[in-house]
Length: 303
Length: 283
Image (cartoon, rainbow over all chains, first blue to last red; front, side, top):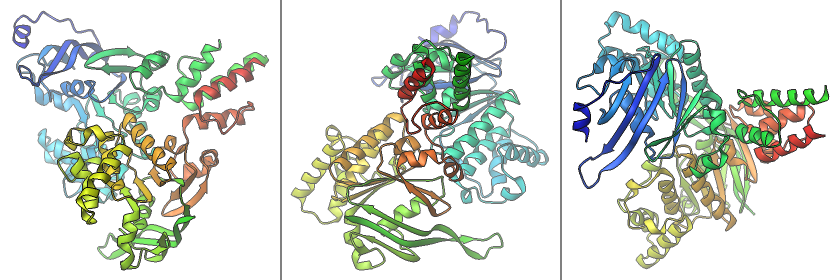
């Protein structure tokens, strides 16, 4: 199957402004064996430059398999995938360039810290990508300051002496030091306390809004997905079940629950208002915005 | 009946100062707390606030440097009590993968009673009973490594139950799980509590403390407040200081009440709150 697809691959037209473009993407683990397992089933999607996209779905739905395609940790088996102009279905894409442009943050990235000092850890990736040694420290300083750590205070510390939230930010800095254009994150807030979550999310939002970084965030926390993402991709049994803006997606309460996903609290609240005939603005998704919208509804009635 | 008593308990860790000298860091300080039999108590606070230190003080994994910890009236600082205390306090930790010791589920669960020298026949009974309590009977002969995170944590709980403790301490046992896994573990905890088990749930997910009898808020090693979930959720200042956040529905209820809506600040169900607001608007 994969062979013939490669030979007869039709000319694909990648939409303008697409950071990621997938067409008929399939993937099977242990193909041609008794343990073959279809992990991606005909995925078609486009992510535009500068978007903040959340990826949700049950364990085993194909989310991770998909994001691992994006910097070619998994090579395309069947179908077409283009990331920042790199044709990943081609035989020999420029992986080094690709991996500099697509930063990948795995689950619990702090488990991957290993060096004696924070500085050495952040510089490790830079060194591997061939950045000259005199430039590395400045780039590491920029990255550590970006994640809100005081460079001079932490650079000589052992990463293992830091708190959980700080460790995660050091790990993030290691990825951000290369100034990736796409940031792919697998549950970046898992295991953090509420303050740590807010810190990481506001950093990601800042990268997205101020620096124009395209963000793909895998998350199990529907409240955080609802409040942060421009668009939500829902994976189910290897297929892309939904590709919708958050407000629209979470109006489908029954379908969401049928997939064993939670309806975010603010979505459930607004849905109830809408069922009773009130109009809630489409973009209000945080507690503050929802509260302001409700107050406005009341004032409109009183006027 | 009081089963756990902490009287002015302090614990300090050894820490190295920047100049290389040895100093100390606060684990917990001046903690006084009492837990009654059959209670479901939540212990909340940000990372590093002393929650886990407190948990480890409860079964003598740590011995207080000041004050006393007694469990069923037994002082944890006395060596001769440790065995009895640990039989009564089952602990489950954060990472399910770090708590599996055997390659078959039922052998893993049997590890505790084997170490207690329980006769073979009774071990089998205990293991079967423990697996049933967490709803994992059908997985008895499986390998733990192929289970989901929530299932692994339920096996870890079964392992604790096999020593037949009267108190179960869940030290952030839900932190690394997906929502489904969290739900499974919490359901088991509440079911055990309904059967009389005293449960101490350590967490920073405020949604999980909704159904608890009592919430203990910690910050920088100190207990800063003890109250019911709704009392705690209303104290915005306290939560902010402690690096926590009330469930969003509770936040919205409070904000709407402040804006003059006739809604209960205790409401934590988004649907009900929505219904209440509609009635307000339709008036």
